[in-house]
Length: 61
Image (cartoon, rainbow, N blue to C red; front, side):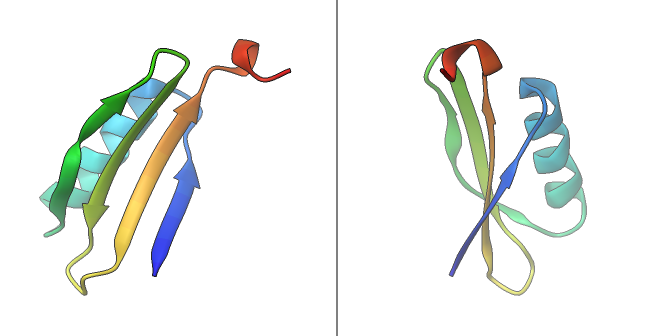
């Protein structure tokens, strides 16, 4: 199962990743920067995969 969360900023996505890693999580993929979209992913200690994604509101029309 893949769980996805929406971040309010690029920094918030990085902060969630840092918190997850400090809490025993494991990074899954390098951060993905697509200009108007940014995301990070990690697995929690139970192996559940999480993605945290920020999308620039100006890019959503």
